[in-house]
Image (cartoon, rainbow, N blue to C red):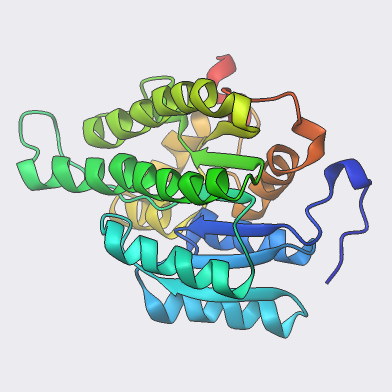
Length: 260
């Protein structure tokens, strides 16, 4: 595969580490970047899913390697990072896309459901970027860190997702703080806040409540749910020289959701 776009938007030959690459938005991003010539380290806790993603990328002429770890496990993450460096080199683009949700009203939510979501979405993202940044700084590699946040961090959406919203709000604060801390090192840090996209997580929620799809789209001025592939362009922008002066932002990709 090769990148036939304007060189300003090129990710050709860039080394990428992406968590949550086994399904949903992470999967679409991994495939999208590989299609544009990036070398992708696809990380997920589900070994079968991440292998399928890499097989698909390679079958289409791309370059990818599977990495298996739970983002809560720093030792496993460090081992995966070492494998990626041995195979491709130090990552230049790091994307924290791993995320889960456990629904429950504020007074009924189980302590474990609160903690699991915070541990994966917020702490897991922190684990990934700080380990990768240490290697980038040591090797004097400049690059781009991208968190996957959510419009749930910017506006109130519905009940039962206090844990998820809090985890993504933490991502936004972490984005701004790390952007300040790593700016002089040439490492840019940004976040993307998608509205409702058709991921397995959302499809499960809709299956439990079929009226949910109408509720979700009612809040999106474009009148539809996003498709995972529609996030790739924004990722390419934030990964490339086109956004060389952009750091510390939370960019809503939301069909107008936050403009209401």
